[in-house]
Amino acid sequence: MEESGGDKKDGLFRYAEGYDKLLMFLGTLGSIGDGLQIPLMMYVLSDVINIYGNRDAKVSNSTVDKYSLRLLYVAILVGLSAFVEGLCWARTAERQTSRMRLEYLKSVLKQDVAFFDTQEAGSSTTYQVVSTISADSNTIQITIGEKVLVSLTY
Image (cartoon, rainbow, N blue to C red; front, side):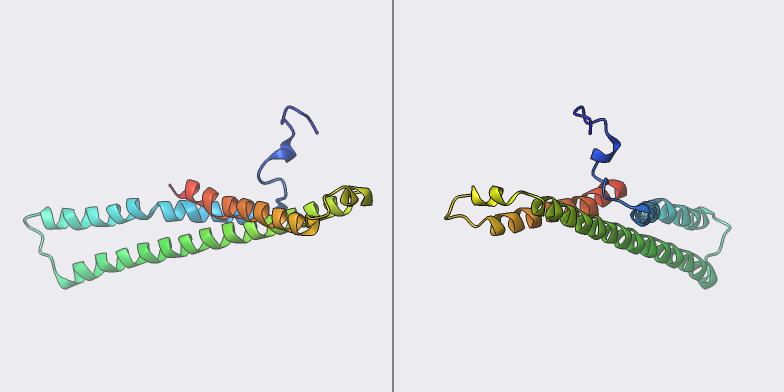
């Protein structure tokens, strides 16, 4: 590995496999669909406003039903997009974090036995290792599953 940080494998998604990249792509598409909520709603409502603003137009129940149905379609599309977005990003975060925990545990188990003998007698090395793995992996899982997701949505 390079010291300058120029290695491509030093990023947040270094444990992502092909399936994870697919999940991230689908999650990003879901994020785009989720972000289209207001523009699509304004597009549908602009037609409604144009009809109400026209003096000659008569607003009937069928007109209201037509635009209500369009708003329902927008809501369904945005709801499905938001679901796909959350599902895909949460799943890839879990998969990558699990892979990261496994690699971390493998690297700890590769340590020489003398490393564990040099620890203080009163401290629990096993507890510290498990605690560190859990805390770090939970932080990374939250970052991938929620923080990246929020930054894509807004």
